[in-house]
Amino acid sequence: MTAEAKPKASRQRATWKQDPEAVKADILRVAREEFAAHGLSGARAQEIASRTKTSKRMIFYYFKDKESLYREVLEQAYRDVRNGEKALELENLDPVAALRKLVSYTFDHHRQNEDFIRLVMIENIHGGSHVAASETIREGNSPAVEQLEEILKRGTQQGIFRRDIDPLQLHWKISGLCFFNVSNESTFSVIFGDKIATPEGQIALRDDIVCTIVKSVLA
Amino acid sequence: MTAEAKPKASRQRATWKQDPEAVKADILRVAREEFAAHGLSGARAQEIASRTKTSKRMIFYYFKDKESLYREVLEQAYRDVRNGEKALELENLDPVAALRKLVSYTFDHHRQNEDFIRLVMIENIHGGSHVAASETIREGNSPAVEQLEEILKRGTQQGIFRRDIDPLQLHWKISGLCFFNVSNESTFSVIFGDKIATPEGQIALRDDIVCTIVKSVLA
DNA sequence: ATCACTTTGAACCAATCGGTTAATTGCGAA
DNA sequence: TTCGCAATTAACCGATTGGTTCAAAGTGAT
Image (cartoon, rainbow over all chains, first blue to last red):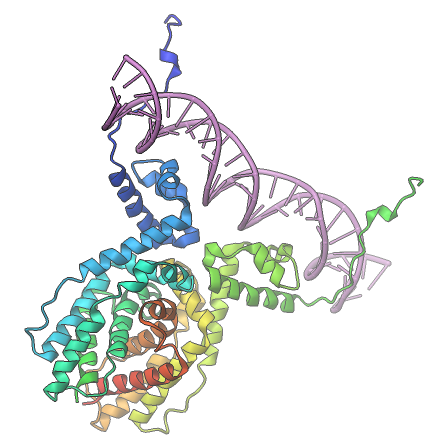
């Protein structure tokens, strides 16, 4: 081997495609998982970077700093979940059936969006300061309450629902039960066993919740 | 100035009382607040120290490291809350009244123990790994379920309660609603307004929850 | 008096972490 | 071709942080 010029010790650099949107999306996806798993202070920029196809530098290149990234993750998560609340076409169902469907759907929806639930938990630990700071999140609140209002109106007109039901409070109860199911699964299972967390347990629980909610509004 | 021995730069040292238990208790109290406010990774040893009457050194002197301190905080919090679940003397009440009282009490109790709720939230973000590691916490589970069993038994004997109620599932629902009330207050208020969080809103909510739970068990 | 246990205080340390620098390379338009 | 800007990378940096060392001294039971 002669000392022939190894091309200037130039570190070979992979050629790349320019696709900033894809890079940003990649970062956001991983960041969401990391924040959901470890919280705002617990998540590590380096760890997020390692799991993306890009580098730590790019995180700060596109998203100023950690908190800005967190805020964007949060906004995107809220946006995704709201988009996921697709039309349930409850208008064609009688009030009781509509309510049952709405509750079942909420239960499953929360179950399927664990990362979102975890982000909301984390946000609550921070006193909700970041959701409060985001106009996007504050404004576009979920259509669930309006849907409920509509169902309740029809139900009371037909005389099968109580007339003193507060839609917001009803939404609160549905949310609470469906949220808690995901958010507190770990500690509840550790202390009381995983009977409720099993697939059969979840089905039984969902039925129970649906039934409980329906009963609470019947005249 | 001769180089006379300035008493060896001996810093004057305050005299003190020995009271290791008080010092430990002081640290635990502050640590609980800090962990509840900022999470495991978010809490700062220095900040905990500053708020105690002692120094950072003593934290590690008594509690090996941060995680051990966190675990002890968690255990103490569970212990305190369980001790706080004082006898409600439900035996003398008819089943419905007993259930109403138990639910009301749980609602208030959670409300009054925000730090505990926050610690449980944090623990759930960690997948419950620390509660799982603590024998103390896993074993002494709350008497709430047994109390419920007793109430349910009396209720079914009298024929006023359904016979297919699962005590654990009922406990789950009560916990869920009362827990969510505290845990998600921030984000819920930001998005839906603080109508439910106001004192009057809380009273209405509690009544609603009590009513909802009772209805769910009536035959 | 003695001796183990506490307490104090402050400096110190190694690792970690958020964030930056600087230099380079591809891209797209003139 | 050339030139300015976007994208990329690795090395670097200053601050923070959990945790320790060291040295001294008070406390209290025996």
